[in-house]
Length: 202
Image (cartoon, rainbow, N blue to C red; front, side, top):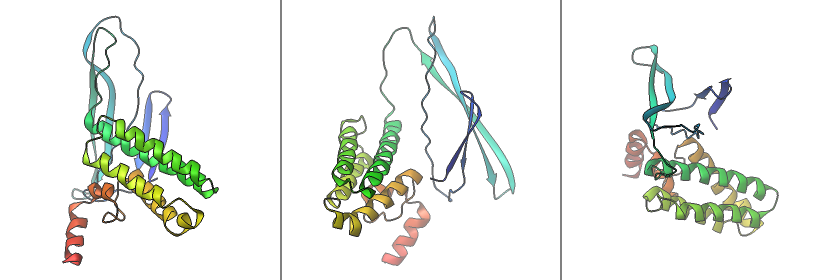
């Protein structure tokens, strides 16, 4: 979906290439780490270095920026609350994955199972920490709209299949392709797209 993952050193160095990104767009990449247990408290424990190399088209040269991410290692087994913005992105990825699975099932004629996959994702998003954020609410509503158009093979062929595929790609790529029809895609519109939309609608 526009990303290429290379494992340069197993469990050490991973490289992700984003070959398709436009001006003013953002990409949020989620990864999970398992940290070894420590024998003592360790504030500001560095766990990962993130580096981004990109072409600066203004200066016509490649540039590199990096940052070290740290966590406070505490004494005990307390589990902190998930960052709210991270939770929003987790919901996005979960929804996109559910749409991918649902699309595969629906293509085999298993519409009921496909709708169950979407429903399960909706339920999880509805219980998430960011459930009251506009994006999460819109995501649930858009998934319901898609599911409503997958009740029969005819519905899926004429509407539901296209809706499912468009939204799957939109949320995987974080790029709007029909934002006026799906509220959850509106957050991907950049200023250029919004200005063009206003120009044509005005």
